[in-house]
Image (cartoon, rainbow, N blue to C red):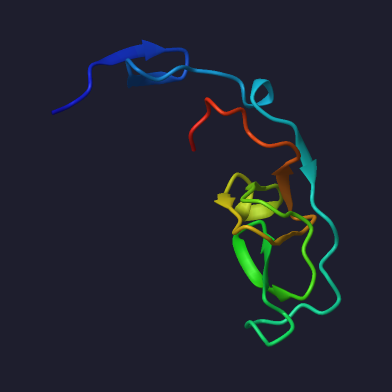
Length: 108
């Protein structure tokens, strides 16, 4: 069964959806420089995923976010790529991330 559709400023979407500005839902911030102990695969100490503009780029013993967090690539070919971190992870300066938790009525 196909949901009824409606025409909006961004094109056709399901009638149950709303078009909202991302800035009305959350605040974005740039990530940090890569951690110094970045490894390509997890190790005994480096267990936290490090997210760049195109998703996980390695692992570190440090983390910069503590809950699942929306990450958006901000440079080059990966600009606009969207990921959600695991519970604890590091977001590099090649990406933007949500600073505050999403409102309870927003589902990703």
